[in-house]
Amino acid sequence: MQINFQKLRTILKSSGMSVYRDEATTNAAYPYIIYEFVNETHKRSSSKLFKSMPLYQIAVVTNGTEADYEPLKDVFNVHGVEYNQFDGIPYDENDATITQFITYVRCVN
Image 1 (cartoon, rainbow, N blue to C red):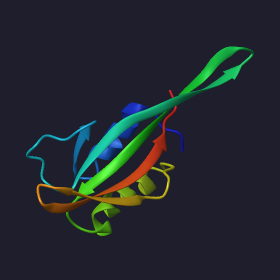
Image 2 (image 1 turned 120 degrees about the vertical axis):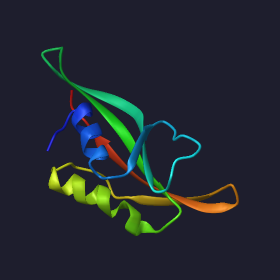
Image 3 (image 1 turned 90 degrees about the vertical axis):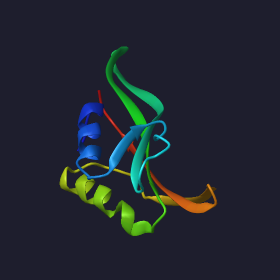
């Protein structure tokens, strides 16, 4: 299902996790969601802009396991949101191992 950016934000918030754009606050409790703009493509018809389609990277940041992104998958599936597979990327933060589970969603405006 095609969704616009405002609907995507609403769906992210319905996961029950805190949602931030670009970066979280320093005291954010795990797990939380960070979304970032990646790029935008355009669909044209007769040289006129028909649709702009921004792509967003969505990361579930956690000090837990892949089970922590299940609530986000659940709300995506309930709302019919098309998303890419989740990729886990571990890193160290304040001497703790943190993992970002990253996916991408293309919106339609």
